[in-house]
Image (tube, rainbow, N blue to C red):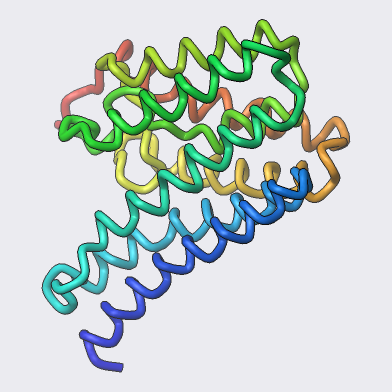
Length: 232
């Protein structure tokens, strides 16, 4: 396979995320939340591998006519923001006005964040909460906390998008990557199992989802608090 075909194949892989987004949306319209999240987890997995492949096969050099970053952002907004926001609104987890507040806050602030040229920090972490509402909403479905808790977390995460708090990128944040990458993969497995089990996961899956979610949410902030030792 030529370098150009490899690069084009990466773009095609990224574009499959749009198909998974449509499948997730069709499931959401039918209120089949479990299947919706299964497709979103599949899209999340594709999003996790297409970036490293794009860098490995130098897509900007060998297939420059397609903007892979723009394609990725379009699909990410659908799978990370738009569909999860709809699910949160339509699921009944948020009664009355709280549902309206959340979908407005999530979609509006995330659109601004996706257009922010400062979303990546110098160490390749995300600067501000990276609008991973697919992850947050899935945890809401699994844990089913009180609606006031959901509302508070949504507002806090939306506000965090416009701070300098850092959130690790599993592949690109080098610090703690040998730990972060397996934890991100474990989160994907636990999330997929929770969705597949109709959000009635056993204690092992629930504990795994909770622990991995907390790590991914807090690791970057902890790294900011704990200075990295200079290499000798």
